[in-house]
Length: 443
Ligand SMILES: [Zn+2]
Image (cartoon, rainbow, N blue to C red; front, side, top):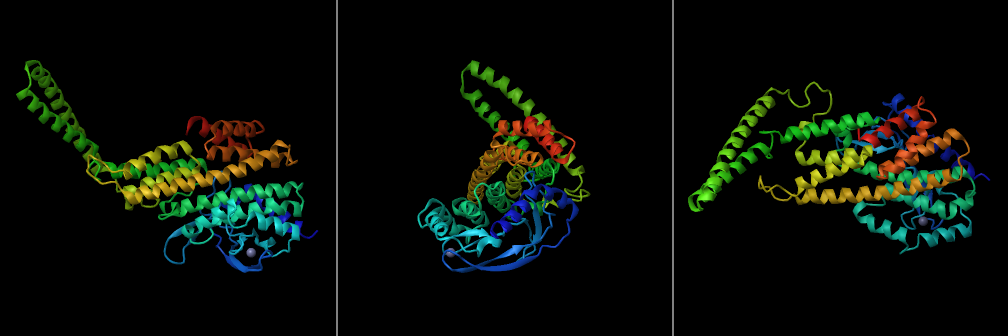
């Protein structure tokens, strides 16, 4: 059978994803090349095409679950975009939604397989409804949907066609779900301004934490006294002064005891206000002495972004790195900024609220796809496959990291611990050990 050989090759290439971490460091400057492929749909004969990415450039960073990004300038502007490697490998028929890797797409199907796929993708089926519903907003069939469709098609008919017992095929389908999730992560990363523009291109967890700290520092500078509309000290001073005025009123009208209490409180408040004023003067002085933000750091100038951009960037950066708890904290902060502040009398920011709602939706969707990939890897592992111990260890690592990314901390901890127990000297053991420390301590 000729059919299984390209799939076999693809499965091998995909399961070699671990090697991408090494490749990422080796070839950061390679150019991103594209090639357009056109194929005829074996289900409905519609001819469609996609442009295939052939770059090995991973200057956009590599995530802990081996998602490698290529860094490109968009044709329509000067914006850097981090694009997940291989995201265009799938062709989807715009008419019937049949999807497969471009290597397989044009291959003829048996009548039985074609029937099964037609039935799965029929109008009104769960997967077709989901794709069609998102099509208008996505401006076409988004990459994540195409990978999900391909995974569904292979699982419906491709597995039988290509040999359901082949471990390569089943791992390959797991990778398709995984890559569908990567496409959503890419979408989150490349929203404007892209994380690449913000300078967030993590290749290790320490890169990610350092990048997040830089964003946090930029947010803190924006919020420092005199730097932005939010000035907590000034607000506190105003509040205290307001209370003093209120107490003064109580003093004039209340009974003797109340007057006594009010006078005590007034003295205390005067003292607090005085202390706050001194603190504010010290902080202003420090701010004046601080070097220009970004100066001498060699990184991107985060000072050019406003607070709302930075708080959303912090959520997206946590997401990219799989820092689920940190992400929750940053999300609450961003929601607070979006809901406006009574103190500074700013109105709720409905654009920001919408942006956060959409972001949360994408994150949930990515979690669903990561969960699907994780469950497929776990099922294969539970059968004692793949047979090769090094390969099995890689999938245990992936099972742990995907669990971490969807917030299943206990399962992540157990998985990383088992990878570490088998050795910490090699690269995978070292990464697992670092991630184990992260899930245990949050640092
Ligand atoms: Zn078709």
